[in-house]
Image (cartoon, rainbow, N blue to C red; front, side):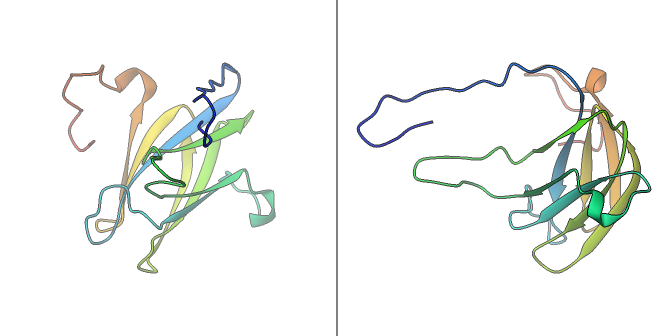
Length: 133
């Protein structure tokens, strides 16, 4: 975190409790990161009023900054969720019964989603599993 004429600070969230879900997006036109897309997370089978979180894919939020193109949702005690993805093109994809503690790839062109569990994620420098970028 930085502010004009102030020292730069790095803030780390050390909380390691609860479930999570990461979402990698590819837009219907093939753009990695699918900037402009919005993603909503709900408990599986719940009403839309039970929103767990909403994220918007963007490249940055300020001067000399960059956002992670992988969206992160903290799910608390929830281990099974639904996602609604609305791409900037207007295309909408809904994914149901996704397990927590994994990274999901949502390809807007192919309407497919693939999951990579935490244990399957490659170490830095290792090639990614098939279908995961």
